[in-house]
View 1 (tube, rainbow, N blue to C red):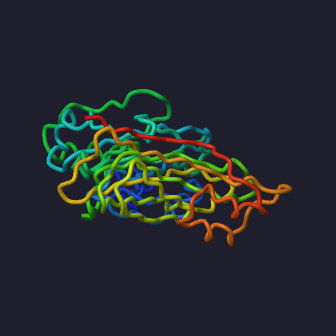
View 2 (tube, rainbow, N blue to C red):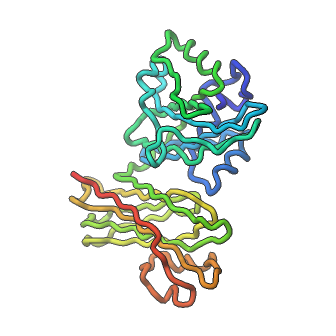
View 3 (cartoon, one colour):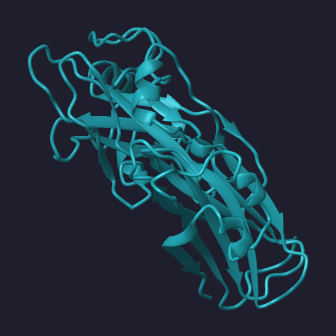
Length: 322
């Protein structure tokens, strides 16, 4: 993993030691494997949103072997710049996958080729304010050998620049509106050829106050919609239509913004239900269909009388307890 764009795997590495282009904060993309391989000669980092609990961080690795195909196992740690000399203070600050896995692997990487982690790390900037990240990659599922401390800052730099499997990134940040709650839900289209019309039915179960805003986002499919509660009721539903491209596997991020001074309603639940279209005679729905879905209840039968029907394929919910 490179320390800078000028790093070609030599020891010590040249250039900056804190600008790794291989730890990448980025919106979701539809095909991260090919996307981050194709721009390997670029630094495509975006910024960490300090108001979000869901920042996606991708990692890419180059296989320096000339003979062996290798699988890379990537570890990611969050630190403060002032703590670099004492890894004992940050090596327990693991950044994990959406499933809570502290190690994310790549597909097998041929000699001299690039690999990208199978899924992104998820960084919660609301609970963790350390924006300097250390990447550590191994060719097996072992435990990284990280010293507890360094005698000097220069010793830490020597450690970084003297090991091709360690890198550092000081991320840029931006201050967005702070969410009160974030939930991510995984979805996919297993078909390699047909796109589908999908509908995410966002359900606020509980008496959420007027002015509560719901944002539904998945950059990989170009989805970013906001809805607002206008009436207090036991359940408020926001159906959001989308196109799900063939072969995609991504996450939907649902964020809740409560009005100022409002708290989470007692016993309330955020539920995301995902429906996908059933095609007629093997023909998938086309782009003209989902525009009619926006803001229309998913049980409106006239939308699908001549096209097919909706099939519920998944549900994810979170109940916030006192």
